Image (cartoon, rainbow over all chains, first blue to last red; front, top):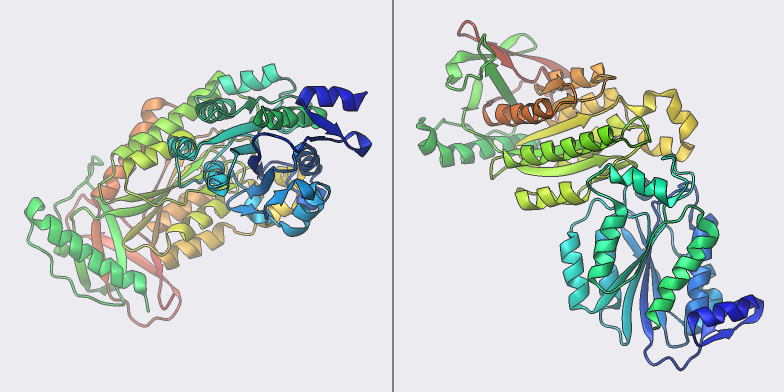
Length: 234
Length: 316
């Protein structure tokens, strides 16, 4: 039943054992995806192997990967690290291979991420691929220490016909006191900048999706990421 | 070899060559030396006004109490390399309109400071908040600097690793030639000194940001010829140790209320000082690798000089 509901949600999906869903191989246009993960988000103590949020995300990506699709996973902090390119045949090993081969030094994570430069690089990662080219970022939206400006990023993405999407993931219990979207928005209403305004700007300018933050991340993040990935296949 | 000292002498010579016609001064005769110690001196009269028309003979420099010969001298504007360090942490995690206004004030004041710089001045913006984040760009392009201020400042609610941030800022401009300035806008004392740091953060955070202290920064400032300016904006006050570092390096420290005019005018005062300092050089004696006390005396009455109070003698 769960499988069926999800299948309806994403269109022409196939059920896999355990309720996982994948897309049928006859997609008209394969998706070339650069998934950018902001590794400066707490919990800071966790390395990639014990980061449950990352595990959840990569499992969703694996489930959504059609046979002709490709994905590279990037980790942005002060620098950006990229995995190899995974295809639909790599669904079952995506998570284990990523966490086995990627290491983001803790020292590089204790800062605001160079998100704009990471996205700029992500555009380059998929710019010359065939099919639909897309970047999906999992981030809390803060960005600092960049060479490129966001205007340059948007121009670069447009020129390469790459859409930028963002799943906005402020962490629960972040010490800033918000427990609902309303509190989150109230907090940022006091400032002339806000992560959601920034992410809305770059996603809308490039034809991508923006999935705003929600208070209870674990289950919700899964659904929002799936929505962002589904949109790429439509 | 003291590479920085070589570049100091040649940088001044270049600036004087370019600007002597504008200033109406006779070009100063500089010796090129690998052992020149740089002193940037601010001179004020009894009313606190900057005095900018003194000559080399008006100055006396004492190295550990002994007069030394001034071998380079200029009162032309000397460009600076500046690390602008902005503490964006607020002690309360809850935002209010007041905090939002302060955020805007800091951003706008920093932008105004950038506008007052010389075309040759170069700036790297470093932000504190969720750790320390230096911009990779060290630039004189004011539009780039304004873009960074507009896009890369975020309010934080963490404890401030003040000394580590200054240390990192110094490192980030250490290879540059000429006058190197650290301008710190500090909202709170060093968080590593706080017991709360241990309670609120994990060991790895402490291991990243709490390995550097006041003594390390003082040593680094002396050996690297940095000037430190500090502006304190929080009710907790500017940390006295930071004020001491600023004094020792010949910079300055300011403790201001959270007030639009105060912060903007203080930034303006720092820029004005930097643009009206005397660049003085002398050749030290034996490189004994010790800290030497420096004194800058003025022969005319009624004037006071503010300059670095020490240097590290010897190879770096």
